[in-house]
Length: 231
Figure 1 (cartoon, rainbow, N blue to C red):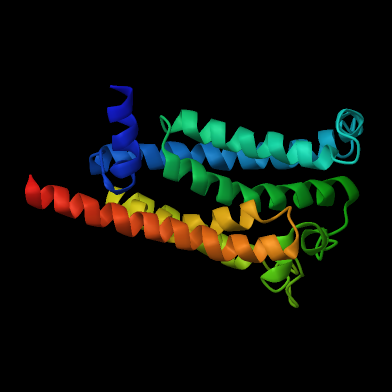
Figure 2 (cartoon, helix red, strand yellow; figure 1 turned 180 degrees about the horizontal axis):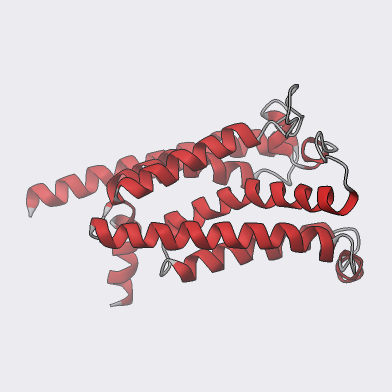
């Protein structure tokens, strides 16, 4: 029974649409709302609690010397995935895309928190992204500020566009949602996988992860087409 369930998960889940359109729309709404609320709250929490008052980052740095910020990111990323997964009854595509959405929206509210705290407009922010995240560097410097108001990091533009495309597609129905997730998800995962490595591995990740993901999808589509023809 377990082997049959695993076989179905790996060979059919990614190309099988189990939900009716109306049920899927409810799942989309729950995922979107959960990701939005989590991102806003964590943005405020990260600025005021983790980095400033009472600055629990210092405690993280005691537990993980020099890597407290990475532990904070792990908590944040795990939190958004778990939150959206529970809200959507463990929708993989909503969880992954909710993570991508959070990567921008949480950052926006972190800097809004600084604006509230200091009264100084926060952008352009210091470009820690390119110095810390290898995939941002090799993609041309996604952490640099755009040269016009509001002077936000460059990665907001493609990031929010892809998130918008996904959520509009997801609202339309399960099929368009799955197509958008498969088109966007592999590149986003490649960026995450290679982010904290060196530049060579970042380039490797950006090439190999999408290739493997899209090859896997093509194989699944072919196998399921053959199965329908035989069945």
